[in-house]
Length: 386
Image (tube, rainbow, N blue to C red; front, top):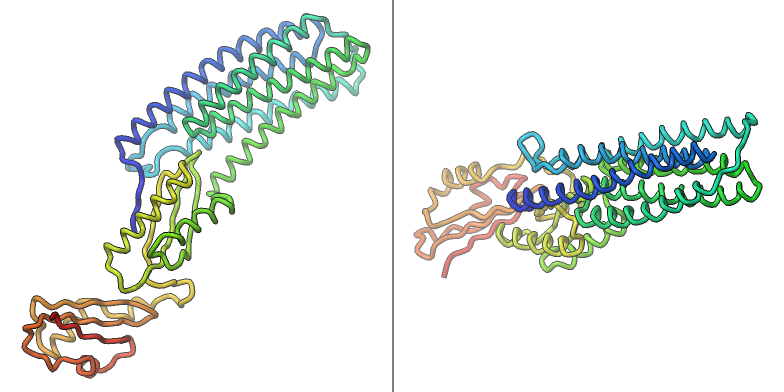
């Protein structure tokens, strides 16, 4: 079994750089959200637009989510420690879950309030032109911060930053809805403003649900897509020396991918050759998916999916076999060695002797007779150095 991940020093540097980049873009977005929220709430209140007020509240939820992002990124970008050997990325997942829950709650409340206003026949007012100006400023600025934040999120491989970027994009979408509904209301369809307020609230709920559901799937260790899994399996199978891949499991922590793979190789090869084959598989997988953080590979001599579980207590150890041979055939010289292959619930035995060994009468048949041909014994081979 081999586990391969980034070195602690490189990992620490990467985490610090990611944390700084995430903090910078989040603070810029938070200041912009606070400004836009204030402008939209004031303009919506003074110039009779419920939709713009809801859109302003949406911007203030962005401010709240930015605070969550700052706190979560500081915690989740800490390196592995004794209690958290795989790192702290799950904190980022919990932060995304919290952000989604906030959006669902705020969106549902706003949708309910404006639906009641629409059906209870409250007096409706025609929005005025400053509403158009505020909505246009919001669309342009939120689209800019969306692109900037998403670029940083993809660069540092952070689902939370990408989620926060899409939160900004929904603010831009909702401002477009406000813009169009205001034009319609000014042309005489007054109720469009309240309908737009409900629509904006539904957009908020939809985005919140997506963040929440994706986080839940990650917390229960949902693996890679079938397409990516088959791609990795094909890479392993195409690696020289790999006879089969009978288990390939994956899970995510944020953008990072963790893999466990069982590789079947020829049973007669050495441990070091099997290890080298595993390293080649790892290199190929890392080249195919750059977000792989950790790969644990296990080298198998046979596909144990097709064979009932080995009865380990019933198969003798190396020490037991060596002792039994020594007691019946005499002590083997220091230069000799045993090769044991545990295959198909049997032990296949090889004895390697030096050419000067004074007992050439040792044969496979004598070994079987000395061991009383036990049921666990498979093939026996005697090798004498030339």
